[in-house]
Length: 344
Image 1 (cartoon, rainbow, N blue to C red):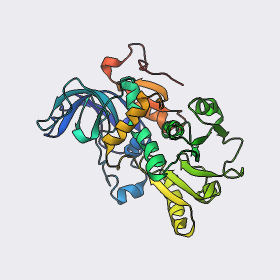
Image 2 (cartoon, one colour):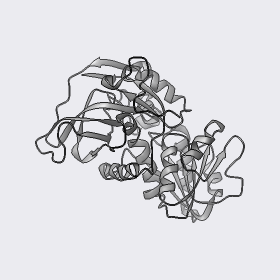
Image 3 (cartoon, one colour):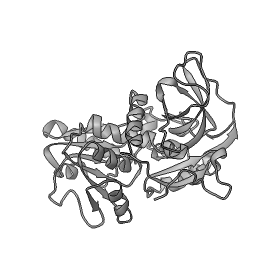
């Protein structure tokens, strides 16, 4: 099978498209033929081995990448199942949040990490969901303890996590304010934000507004400044770490958590890759998607062979919504994949 293999750290050029053996599912695993995947900061941070401190702490390989095939999001069809697998059979359409393996034609997934694909989504749309939407769900529901009627601010509302967070907060009954750049104000309003703040014109930490929950995806403001935008018992949730822009979240999180014992406001961090019950979270999202309450926002699509180009584009950090990859059988012969994709 074809796969983009990561053997050393560096630019997207280190991703080597090569032939490797097709994986064989273990007793409790499912072999999935990948139809679509997506690109996100989690991938290019592992590709570049950033930050170096993460190598020293064991989060990344010190000299060589621990992950050989990137790609945390996956949607596809079941090809074969292990002998102890129940609930899945060849031909089933599925999606999953992986630690690795999506940048390949086939991947083995534990049956407890795999969920049926939402019926109303294409493979490309489904591949845009797992990491970004689970991160938003954990940040709002689990760490943020969101309640109906609360005032919620999403800083970085036009990105992959942010576009899901705006829709989920609205679905949970909150009044949502999204912060984004001038190009994406209309997009954020169209997905359900009650109010949109253009960060080029207004500083949400200094406008006098107070929120019960602040989900900080983009950074750009210090932890102390963000606390000014919270109610006295508000909650500040940071999206950062391996899937975020590392240098900002590391210092940002240290200062935020250092102050936590001395203030009534709560501070938490959302991490989808290390979460338990991935299948349950994906099924929760499926219910919301099939009910029409949440829809993936996709910026661009690329064919599998152009993953390096897709990574370069996503690494620039200006993509509204998600960047998805389509594998061969679903690819247009005339350029980037568009089947099932609604660009913004």
